[in-house]
Image (cartoon, helix red, strand yellow):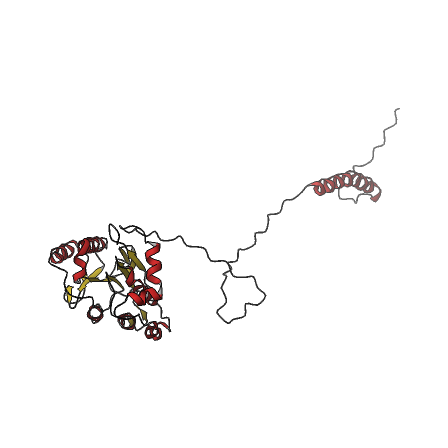
Length: 320
């Protein structure tokens, strides 16, 4: 009779696993994971990570030149000033100055010998020149900014312009009066309409447009001025001082003065004119034009230099 096969009862899942059966699993897991972790570490070490570049914040540095008398220290020298382009000047309608005539005009001995009223007293004008005041800046009211115009090549800027023009008897010769009127009309017409002007013809008296104050450079006012100037005739002697007094008696002085004469003025006038145009805050520039007579050069040059104005010599057509 066959023998029954002995069978073992099924294992109880709740029974604890033998420690001997767990260790082979742990060893196998470590054998697999260690090479993988080693390979991963080597790969990460070979990877190059690009970090964003750090941007340094810009710093604005202002270079300030040291004030006079202040020690600049060991710092860097101040930046060199940037040269400004020269302002183009309108060329005068007349030929260039004659060097020979100017040489004769600026020679003190020659000037003294040719001046029937006596040599110009430079020492008398010295007190007015010593302070060296600054030129008065335009301070007129109203919009439009600064205006500019030229008169026989001398250039002025501002808002209010005064023209003091010789109309003495000698202006009848060689069409001098006609040339002066033509240039004066051109100069006034070149002004923008917000600018203001006043004209004073002088001999031994004054002929003014307008009688008081200034006129704006508008078309209607300029047309009225053109009609008025047609009645001006040369007469009398060359005494400009009272013309300057008339212009400077206004409540608001001009920003610039054009002064033209065709001959010598009294010897005391340059110093008196310089003193008269010296106002609170500075000096009104007087731009001087010697019209055809180089003997007046020394007087007019002194006035222009002392007031910050320009000097021009205008030879007559055909020479003199």
